[in-house]
Length: 268
Image (cartoon, rainbow, N blue to C red; front, side, top):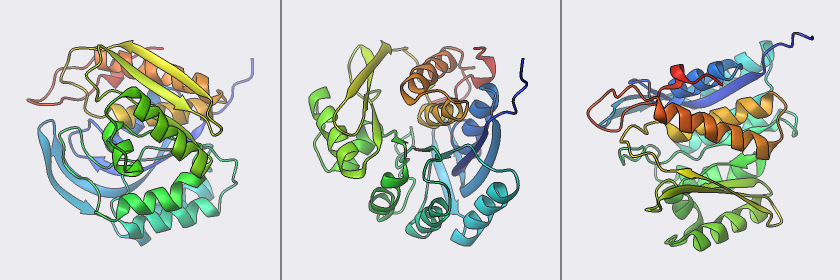
C-alpha cells in the first residue's frame, strides 16, 4: 500500500473568533477529512453564535503575502475561497490565482451574509467576486440569499433557483452548487449545475436545530479537500454533504444562538 501525502488545501477566508465558521471551520474540516490545511486570513472578526460584533479586514498586501508564502513553499492541491471583504482583497486573490495552473481546483463559497444575518463584505465586493473570480472557479457554492444577490433574480421556488444557477454556470463556465437550506421545504435540496445545463439533485431530511453556524464554510472546505484527494466533483459534493449533515447532528450545543457544528465528532 502506497502511503500518499495528504492533499494540501489552502483556505482563503476570514477568521471567526468563536470557532464556528471561517478559517477555523475550514481547518477543522480539512483536517478531519485527511487534508493538510493552510490559511490566508482575509479579515478578523469578533463574532459568536448570536452575531458579528466587529470586522477588521487585513490589507490586500498581507493577504497576497500569505498566499504566496504557502504556495511557494508547501505547494497546493486545491483552494477554498470564503469571505473576501473588499475589492482590494478580491483583486489580489484574482492575481494570485492567475499565477496558478488553470487546472488547480478552486472551490468558491461567495460568503456575503453570516448565519446571524450580518453583512460580511463591502457593498461593491459582491460584483468584484462575480466578475473576477467566478470564471476561475471549478465550483461556486452560493446559498439562496447569496444566489439571489449575485443573480439579481427573485428566487421564490426551486425552479427559479435552478434557472439562476444555470445562468451563472453557463456565463462563467463553472459548476454551481445552489444550496436550498434557506427554504421552508421539509427536506434540504441542493442542486449541482454543470455548464451546459446538466443538473444533479441532492437532498436529505432537515435537522431541527439552531446549531448551523459555519455550514457553508464546512461544505466548501470539505468539497475542496475531497477534490484534492482525487474525487470527482459530483462524488466530492455527495460525500461533503454527508460530512456536514453528520457535523450538524453532532453539534455540541454551544452558544445562545446559531451554535457551531461538531466537526471533531465526525468519523468517516
